Length: 293
Image (cartoon, helix red, strand yellow):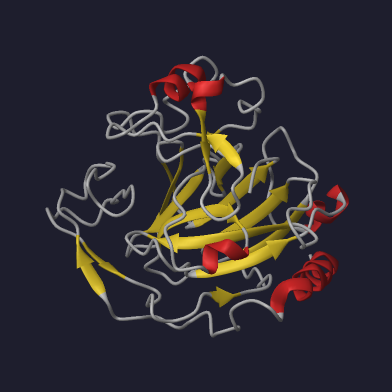
């Protein structure tokens, strides 16, 4: 993992000088919000600023989110952190394409209802698959080639990981695309899923790294050969990916196309089916396959 960390740092230096400055990963803002639904049920909140899901928080009927980051602050840039066996996320880049001017792919962490400014960001190189064998994870097939970083978000993180580029720092909402969603509860348990409700810019797989080794998401390409009416253009980059399928303003052509290939019990395709897994030890691997930025 040490060699992988050195190479990842090198590829991130390419863009670091022109992007938001590095901050302390433990910088936690005290701002909070009140969810308007029962947190014992996984559910996308229509009418909220983002497609939000709340996790089990005891046996209560309300849940207050404690934000990790204030949107008045710049996004926090991170490199791979030491894995000491505690809660956290292995973020794997299985996309061999160099997107933009960086030697790899940029990934961003957004908190729920903080859609204008990312919380964390990094760039992960596409590396030799042998480097993954030294990480403390056992990936399910297909075991992808690529690079990996490890990060421990703040313990109250609730939000999503997405592909992106420097246009994500323009202060606008960049919602279109595949969401790898994660959150942690106060007892250390983590929850994860993959959602296509707000768009599809490529496959994502979320895998729990506890004894159960559960996973959700998909690894197949459903963008290629999609019908003309299924596409939408990303804000910022202008790239085209599959449109959102949410109940409000959702694209029925996109939904019909994706349901031919994907199981709603594995990925969010509907509001009323919740393909969510938990990780008892609070550890996940999130793999992004070839996609559109």
